[in-house]
View 1: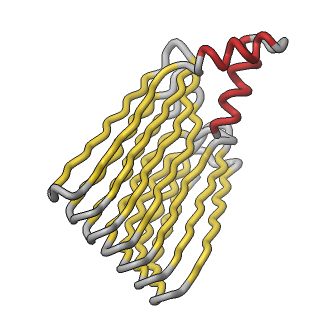
View 2 (view 1 turned 180 degrees about the vertical axis):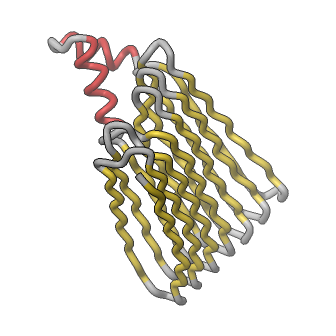
Length: 229
């Protein structure tokens, strides 16, 4: 039991290249809270990759993860969050990018919820500089009685910007409850924003193909889910 608070303020200078890998493991956590607040300032022409993988216990934990990054001209930022091997518990993830001229960024989330997990994901792209490009992509597997809500946002604030948001939620369980909301707002007529979203059970055609090879429906479903995460 207890509470852990992680605060990171990271500044990466012009032209620098940095890779971060974070593994947070709480195998025996019970009534435990983990809060992480991360702020990045990424210089001109710099490259930053931050990968965050979580492993919780049988009952999950209470978790908040908030990431904000400002990417200067020509910079690149890649941020991923993943928890797919263990229970989640209560989870809130927010990732926001402010992209300046000719910079690019990716926000990727992969989460598998089971039993009565609660999942709340928000990914935001601010395309503030000319030529900026961004991707926000969420993949959520909702099993049993999981409740999941995903919001993907993109704001085209400058000319020649491109943003794409994508959410895929796979459900398996009669009591799951999932939702996805794409929010796209263009403030410059030369900005291009797109979105793609899907919610439901695994693809029926893929399921039938695997079952024709001898797998049961349960085995085929699990095989497809493993491929997604």
